[in-house]
Structures are given as structure tokens and as C-alpha cells.
Image (tube, rainbow, N blue to C red; front, top):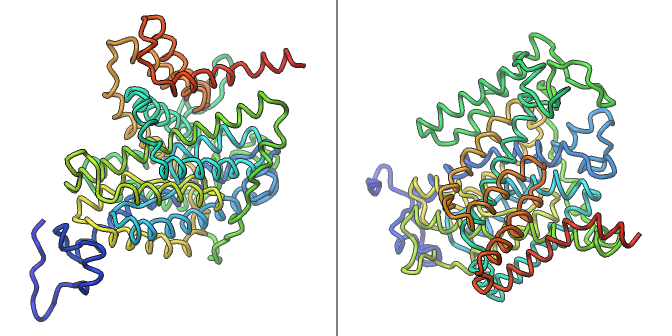
Length: 502
């Protein structure tokens, strides 16, 4: 991109020398104008998380049947209140951590609640404990990954896990998220005679499903046309249409206050309707129980299961971050001869602290976003772009209550589409080699089929180690892999162990 032309009438914005030296704007061949534009582009390409995270975190009850705000899921207005609180906290934590990345990491990368990580927390961890306890595990995951970064142990872990397994984990999480999107949209439902079916009785019926299909079509059209912010535009467009349809036809909810299905063709979660503006609800901040998950665990097997859940979070967060910062650096030609971006250690420190902040804010682990590459493509090269993106998130905090208007059918196309984006990692698996192909296959298919990310990861690690050993290559395995596989064997054997102890 050519440098903007400076004129007396309309001078290009510039930084003073101190700030220029700190952010290395001139050194990296950028300008203040490029950084501002790049930061705004990054914000608009990832602002969808303010809508999607409430759909995932804010609508799922924990083991006790309560939503993340502590209200029983059957209470009137509980889901709407929960989603609004999650939206506000999501915007706040993302804004703060992204600004810190800009000032300290000085790299054009933004952070927010990680897709895939939030699904693991909502659909696996929260099903075994209360929401505050689940967020406590997220905090511990952040603490552990911070220690790994500060001690340099991350390099050993990175080398221990084969690339094919890292790719399989990403693909499996992508399919899991896509499946959640289809369920939230009512495209896939429970059936009689078969586990699931298409729509209502095997057919696509009703306006809510039509909204999903229209939203998905808009998203695909914008994406192939390379329109910036395609996901956000598609969500907003589908939401406006949904509000109009509901106002005109009065479709109503699929379920009543008790959760019983009363209208198969109704809206799956919240009903789209215009609502009055209110100040952001920040009541989720600090709703964390750091030790309850462990103290309430019944026996050693249960404690081991919790430790493995923390490990699953750590593994996903760790490798997603490494891949993201390298990809963003490559987009801006900012990698050194060894393939590392500038200030790698500082970037990883901020990212690890963001995981802790996400748990303390009850929004799940925050992590670096690959969408930052869009801002880099627009010209961003320094931390100033991250500061601009962070300010955007803080301003959006006051629009968070509007998330209550967004039905799951309008947000689900983005969830489904994320599955497509994450599927691209499948090319990094050598499917002709059973040592790579079989563990990758088990990892990928078991995540959506068992509705558990942990099960997929565990099956993949165990099979990888087992096949290596069968082929006489046990010595090629890193000791860490033996330890991880053994831990997952104990995890899957919890029921047997508990029965023997009992």
C-alpha cells in the first residue's frame, strides 16, 4: 500500500519521536494512518465475538441447572439477562487485554474470548460443576500457561506434540463448533428412530430456519467477495430481518418457561425483539471459585478428570496462540529468520495473562485472534493498531445490551462458518500414514460425535502413542507424550476405577 500523500490542507497524522520509537512505526514501514485503519478493520472483523460468546457461554446451564449469571435456566428472562451480562464482560475484557497487547507487546494482534475454548468450557467443563468453578479452572489454565511461557517450557511442549495432532485438534474443534451452530439454528434436532434429523420431521420449515439460511448465504457471499467484517455484517443483517419477521408474524419461542417444546417452528433460544437500552451489566466480573471444582470432586479419579480438563484448555490455548502470532507476523512480513515475530516473549506473556483475565471476567479464556491478519493486510504493523481495536471493544461495551435482540438463528451462520475456516488445517495431516491419519481421524470425529472436545483429544493422544509403540517406534516418542497418554487412559477409566474403589 502506498504511503498517504501529505498536503498542507490535509496533513497526514504523525506521532512524536518518543512514541514513534516506542512503537517502531517508522522502523516497520508504517504510518499512524495505516495503524488506525488497520486497528478498525481488525475490530470489525472480530466484533462478532460480542454476539457469539453470549450464545455459547450465556445460554448453557451448569451442573446445577443455573446459567452463568446464577439464575436458573427456567426463570423468566434468565437467558436474556445472562446473554447481556456475557456480552458486556466479553467486550470489557477484550478491550483491556488488546490495549495491553498494543502497549506492552507492541504487535498488531487483538485478543478476545477464544472460540473453541469457550465451547470446551460451556459444553464439557460446566456440565461437571458450577459456572464459578468452571471459570476457576480457566484461571488456573491461564496461570499454568503463564508459567510455561516464563520458564521457556512452551518450546518443549511445542516440539513434543506432532503437527498432525495440533492440526487435528483445530479441525475437530471446528466441526464441533459447526455442529453447535446447526443445533442452535434448528437445522439439526433430536429425532425419533434416529439420533438426529434435518429440521422439523426431516424438513426445513419455519421462518427461524429461513433466517439461518439467509444469514449463511449473506455470509458466504460477503466472504467470497472478500468484504471486511463479513461475519458481523451477516449477523447484523440476519438479526434485522429476524426482528422484522417477529414483529410482523409473532412467531414466539420454541419452548415455554419450563423448557417444554410448545412451538416446533419457534425461535430456538431468545426471541428477536427491540428492547430498551440499559447500562452494561458487569455483574459477572469476579464470579469465580478457584478451588471449589477440586474440593467438590468425589475421589482421586474425579480430581484427575479435572486436571485433564485444565490440560485440554491449556493445550488448545497454547497451540492456537503459537499458530496465530506466526500467521499474523507472516501476513505483515514481520518474521525473523527463525520464523518468529518481534517481541515474541512479550506477546506470549500478554496472551497468557489474557487467559487469566478471561476466567476472572467469567467469559472464558481470552486468546490472540487470527482475524488480526485482516488489520495487518490493511497496513497495520505495530501495537497502535491493537490500541485502536481495544478502544473499539470498550466503546462497544455500551452497545452490549443490544445483543438480546440477536436470535441464535442469526448468530449460528457465523458459528457454522468458523467450522469451515478451521477445517483448512486438515491438509497438515498425512492421511496415507496411519501413524498420523488414525489418531487425527479419532480426534476429529469424536469431538462432534461425543459432544466433547476432551474425548477427541484424549483418543487422539492414546492412539498416537499406541500405534507408535506397535510399530516399534516407542523410542521416538517424547516423554511428555507418554505422560499425557497415560493421564488420558486414567481419564477414560474413571468409571471403572470408581466402580473398583466403590
